[in-house]
Length: 100
Image 1: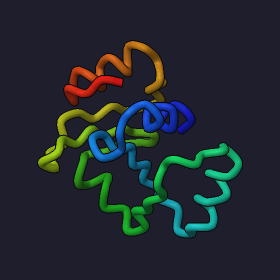
Image 2 (image 1 turned 30 degrees about the vertical axis):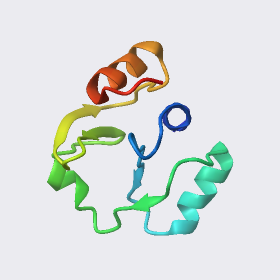
Image 3 (image 1 turned 45 degrees about the vertical axis):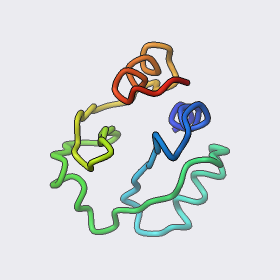
Image 4 (image 1 turned 120 degrees about the horizontal axis):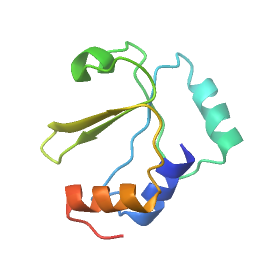
C-alpha cells in the first residue's frame, strides 16, 4: 500500500488513479488500517458485495488490476508488487503514456 501511495504522489490522479479496493465490511476497519500505515492520498473504496473477484477473475489478494480510461481491464497482476520500484514506474509510464 505504501508503494501505491508513492505512485499516486508521482502521477496526476486525473490521469492515473490508484484505487485500492477493500473487501472489509466496515469502513472503520479500512480507516484504521490507513491511519496505521499513514496513507493519506489513496481513496477508500469497498467491495462489500465482493463482486470484483468474479468480474476480474481475481483468485487471491493482493491483486492489481490495470484498467484503461475506457474501463477495460488491460492487465491483472497477482501477488505483492513494489509499484514504486523504477521498473514498475517505467511500466506504468509505458502503459499510460504519462511521465512522472
